[in-house]
Image (cartoon, rainbow, N blue to C red; front, side, top):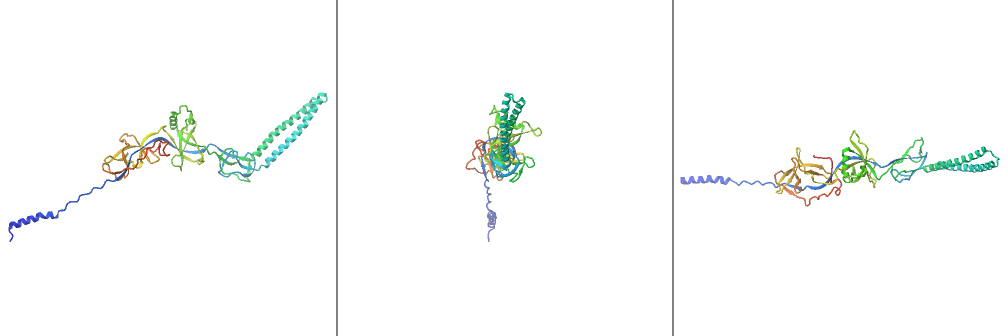
Length: 413
């Protein structure tokens, strides 16, 4: 029989061991790694601000080709759309009627010359008789008048021959200017000037250079002139100021072509407050076609201005505020409120100087451009920095078209 004291001790020991047997160590919770984000620094660019317009092209000269004489078209000497030279024959009319008229005029002058020879002989005979008293004054006057009349008829006929020979020349309808011809409005066999009207046979437009027209508000034009006057104080008028312009066709990337303003109209349209201006632009390859729509931009500032730009995809919105997410030197995500400038053609956004609630963006700041959804303010992130930072753009002139020039529209988003 087990003593009572031993029984109590055994039960107490058993109860003490029960919780120890059922207790297991608590599992520790593993923290997730910081999200990976791609970062880069702001790109410093020197930009020239500009205004943008829409314009249209027009030929420097356009000529409607018409025949100067009446006749049947014998041959069309060009193909539709061909480049032609000044003086090149485009339409050949049947020259035979004009040649016959010229020969008839030449035969008539021979008749007049024969009659003149006889009249001069008669005049000489009458004057000799008059000296001997064998002829009256009236007979001398008649002989002299007959001679002078024939001489005048010969002069008139000489002019008539020249006109007839011009008709022979006009039978070949030539190009008055060099340029690109339109299609032939009349073809071989048609009678030109059949109804007395001067029918248009084709149209020729000059190719190089071409004019570019667009409308500018009065204040902008005055601003362009003021900027250019600082470098050309003696210039008078738009042509002498040589205000530069850049433009591109609807299918061009950016604004690859350039020229200068050479004309501004002499009055402002009071209903719109705009004035028609024109630029002269080279067209050596002939790709610029009269009537085409173009995009135009004109530099507003005379010199490039250094600005900080960031990818527009990195800009976030918080109601009416715009901000960027940055990674500090401890890899902690920070928020930076900024003021936005213009959106560039290459997708970069200009960051304006600090003001109001906006804070400055320093050149050594690393801003998040990819992984923005995973980044949380005041939490750590794993930044992935580029191997090389985008190079600083030296100037607008040295940069690709459309990448280093800001626009005058777009503003804050």
